[in-house]
Length: 97
Image (tube, rainbow, N blue to C red; front, side, top):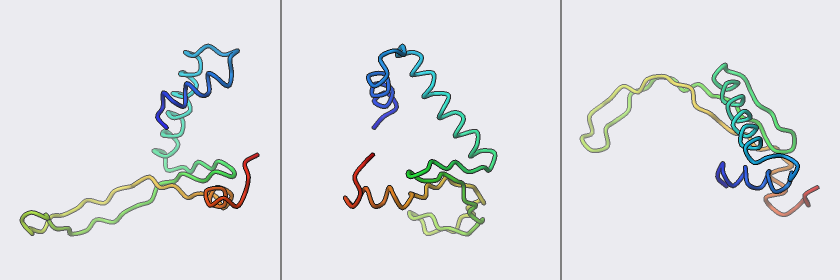
């Protein structure tokens, strides 16, 4: 699902809201989530999962073309941990609410 598909579905499910208002809400939601992750925080959506960042240490890697060693800097990467309910639902063991 793309951002515009999400916006379309939300707009259809809430006909009392203008589409541009739904677009603003989706943009605000994603911006707020990104800000929280950048600040090192965690986002938990019950029965869906949690978004967090993980630290990766600096390391020595290899250029696959030349085999030359290269230094890979330390960095933070986003991570998603699905909730048990989502995993069960994906595997057809629980019906949606």
